[in-house]
Structure formats: structure tokens, C-alpha cells
Image (cartoon, helix red, strand yellow):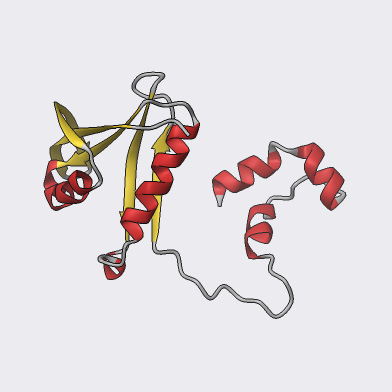
Length: 145
């Protein structure tokens, strides 16, 4: 919500033209919850992704996170999400996609390998709260659209 709010506040011309006023402090929530009459949010969010464009090199993007709720594993959502992310990364002109797997989450490695990612041999230190580990870097060539 905070990022959507930031985008709305950063588009004052749009807000003025479409809403008649600048974005208010709860505009993101209003935008997110606006549905046609009689409609509700039937679908639940099953996953999320974080991609950093042009990092660590200009021709590379890294998938910092691709997370599917465990109750939805085995339904093809991860595979579909990865394919969409690769299309997006390719549309940016990137030649490679990277993914980092924290060693304490090594059960995710077979997924990335099935998606065509290969280990680069690089390891990066990882620390988050009480977890001290390392991130294993995987990479895959990306076809341009």
C-alpha cells in the first residue's frame, strides 16, 4: 500500500484530471478496494515477487524474491510466475536473470534448477535477524522478445 500511495502522490496531474483533487492520505487503499458494484475480491493473493532491474550489471536483473504460499505449492503458480518474470526481464533488454537462494532455504534449489537457472559458483553473505547464512547465486540467459 505504501508504494501504491507513493506512486499516486507522485502523479498529481493524473489525480487532478481523474479525481479532481490531489491524492489523499488513504488514496492507495481507496484505489485498491475500488470494485464495480456487486463485485468482491474472490481471489486471494498466493504469492509475490521482487525483481531488481539492471543489477548487479546493466544487462542483468535479479529475482530477489519469488514466494508462493506453501498451501499453493505444486499447482504451477511458481513456474507461471517465473515465466512471466523472465518475459518482463527480457522486455527490459536484460540478457541474464539471476536468483539468490539462501542456503537455509536450500529446498528451493531444485525449483530454480527446473526453471533453467544454474549455479554461478558465487556465494554472498546473508544475515537477517537471527539467520546467518549465505546466498547461492543462480543465473539463466534470457531471450529478448
